[in-house]
Image 1 (cartoon, rainbow, N blue to C red):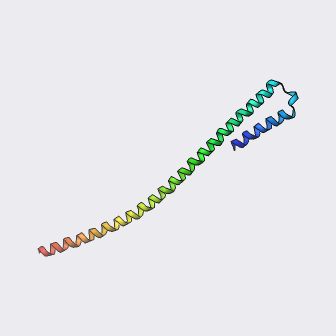
Image 2 (image 1 turned 120 degrees about the vertical axis):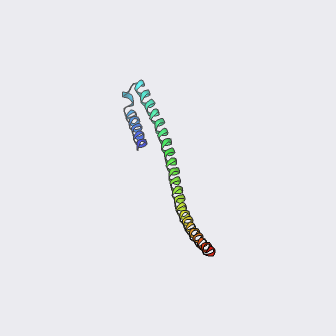
Image 3 (image 1 turned 180 degrees about the vertical axis):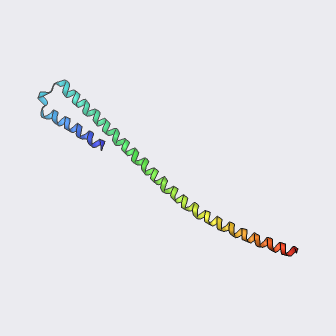
Length: 104
């Protein structure tokens, strides 16, 4: 969005300067070209910033996706461990009962 506005501004200023070249002083022409160059530099920097932000966003999206996968795997593992613990508790309870019955 900003890059398009900057580019349009540069193009508009230079087009106006070209149309009425003779009515501007050398200083005004120089200033216009300096401003255009400054805007080009800013545009380039904004494009680079946009590219970096896009890459950061992509990396964050990938990390979020990976974190969701880990959460799902953790939930499955928790379920399996809970099942195993319940099985062991019931088995130990049965064995304790057997031991008590043998002592009696």
